[in-house]
Image (cartoon, rainbow, N blue to C red; front, side, top):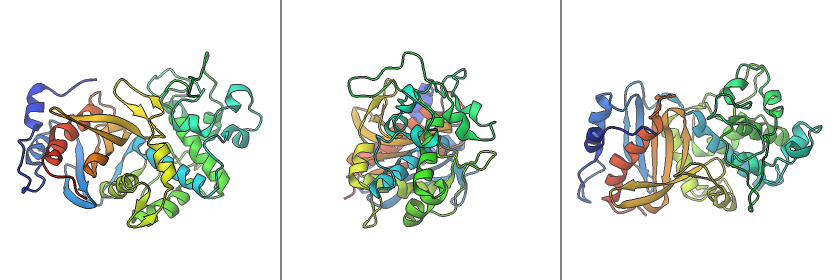
Length: 344
């Protein structure tokens, strides 16, 4: 992974403010304005339920809907949790092929919702490998995405570990099938379910969903949403499924969703469509769960600091896109937060 140059990292590193000073990211603003971080469109920091910093750059703005790409997968995980909580879906042990393609048998018929939620299913599907049979780019030209996803072949030599999980293999088609399964079980179109059960209670306004040529709603990413509407999503998860005193997602689901089930990379663990890593600032390390999408779009929740960090960008497909956002968090936002006491 390509890192920013040493000079830029030095510039991003903030001097430690006193606890009496407000959150100050002026040096970060200078670097972004100079174009050294590509096309960052917003940075928002919320702590203890209060916005401590909100700034837009370039073509960003308070009412701009940002395509957060795969960061929207984490929203799908919340919707699945709601459906399990109300009995619409039995459990993560449900086998979606039994409903969506009853004729499937063998390893494919044994794939569970848990497998899809943890990116560890038997499907020969890896978006990080262009030649993978299940690569998402091969799905988008198809008229009916469900048919493509259901017909992805099973990988050779697939095995589960002692905990029942297969190897991590990033698969957007699997996340798309989660939405299809929820839609079939609930009888409600996926986007309507999310908007009614999750977005409306959180006060999230109009969004734009990606659709297949046949009209299927993409539950695996490419959602266009305002940056400030990502804050209540992070706060909901940070508060264990409660938002402004109302429980929207079962606490047990939040705990299970934010449990590291598989190792995704050398530095990241994976829960149910949520990532986990240690964010570092100097000698300090703060563990955070996060939503992540192409371009470096991220929503980071830091329980230790009671904080939610939102970064939206359009650095799509750039080799250093994720590292740029990580450096914003680690070199600018985190030092400022660590210099202040965590909000109650």
